[in-house]
Each structure stands twice: as structure tokens, then as C-alpha cells.
Image (cartoon, rainbow, N blue to C red):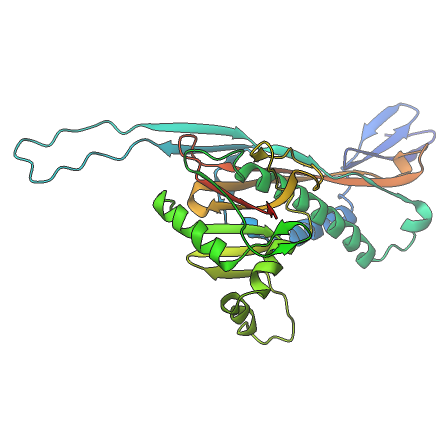
Length: 335
């Protein structure tokens, strides 16, 4: 082919780069160019940052391997246990196993896009890219954790839903959380035949009040490995792993006037008090699906003249069984 004039135009759309050879006799599609290395760096960095974040949510059953096509979780829920006979003289009868197959669509979490001008992109060092991808990973994780905590916490007291109030010394008009409260909580869980794998997640104020004011849990921290770093996050007592959630990020609050869980995002004050929530490992799940990246480079953005990138993650956390939603909540009581 002979062209009177020729030019190579790179078009970037939706993360793909294609090279067009333009001439007087038409347009010839050439071999697609390799995707920018920078995109691979973004995705690799995001996934690594996301997966290394250690949270209490890792205690929930991971059903990510059951996610179909990266977006639908498919898993069975078994029916009732078979009857058991003692010293039966007749033939043992049979029962057809019953199970319910759940198909759960994962929720879509989108991080806000970052827009970087050409002046910032010039000789952009990898640490700066990693910094922004880490912020995206942290932001996505915090939102998923908050949603999981709110889902696992019971709406009100009921069958297989234990709700208790604290009974400790007064601080700022509220009763603190004590070791005796944990014992009373554990006893109630035992009487209600809660399964093992019990995890209690507390906002940091409640966690420090509990741990610092009794020798048993405080001793666990003192005997933690001497690594040169003090990062206390979990203690264990009476078969309950007690996790610390940073600041107010747990987001589970209780309305003492209505006796119900406060709406997600509610502000603590008045009748709304902080609370911790309990879940059993075998009764809940978490499932992560695909990561996706959305990237537009500056050359294909003539108006904004900036590179934009953002991330999307598919995720779901909920109870495994509909019939028995074992859950617990312990909230601060008014003094």
C-alpha cells in the first residue's frame, strides 16, 4: 500500500490503546499497542495494599472462591439435621436432604477518581502512584468493614440475637465496659447455644476501658511478642476474641430509648450510644470479587488535560443462613 500522507494516531479509551495508520486511501488498523506499564503498576499495587490490610473481618468465613464470573456468590445452605434414634427396634427410615442454594450479587464499591495534571505526571515516581492506590485500598476497605459490621449487628434483641448493656463505673455519663460484662455476655451466649468462633468487635474507647481496667486482659498485652512495636488489636477471654476497631470507624450505635440499632452513620449523643457487635465465624461470610480500574490518560482528555484513574471492587458480607442469624451486641448504658 502507498499513501500520499501518513500519520500514526494513538487512541486511548476505556484502558485500551490502539494504533491507527491513516492515509489517503483510508484507515488501516494496525497491531494493538501494549497496555501502559503504569496501569499494571496501579492494579498490582492496589491488590497488594488491599490484601495486606489486617482487620477483624478476616475472621469471617471467606467464600470468595464461590464467586462466579467475579460478581455472583453461589453457595448452599443445608436443611435440618437428621433425626437420631436410640435403641430403635424397627427399620431406620430415611429423609431427603434439603438445601437452599443462595445466589447473592456482590455489592459494587467505587472509589472516587483521582485527577492528576500533566505537570504532576511528569517523571511521576512509583512511590507517589503507590501512595494514591494505597489511599484507594484503605478507603474501599473501611467502607466494606463498616457495612459488614452494621450487617452483622442485630437490629434488636430476639431469637439468637443477644443484646446487653454495660454495668461498669461512670465515665462521661455512661457506664464503662467491664470484664464482668464479658463473663455475663459469654454465659448468655452459652445458654443460647451460640456456636464457637465468637468474635466481639469494640470501638476503641470501649476496648481500652475493658483492657486497661482488669489484670487478665492487660496481662495478655504485656505478654505479647516483644517485636519492638506495640500494636494491640485483639485479646481473648471466655472463648471470645475481642477485637479493637479504630476510633469511631465501626459505626455500630444503639438507641437506648427505642431499644434498637441506630441508623448507619448516626451521630453518638443523647439516646444514641456506642456499641460493639458479636458474630460467629461459621455463621457469616465475606466474599470479594474482581478489582477493576478505570483510566483515562491526559492525551484523550483534551478538556480536562489531566489523567484520571479510579478503582472498583465487588464485595459482600452477610449471614450464611437465613433461619438462624446468631449475633450479639453490647452497648454503653447511661449512668
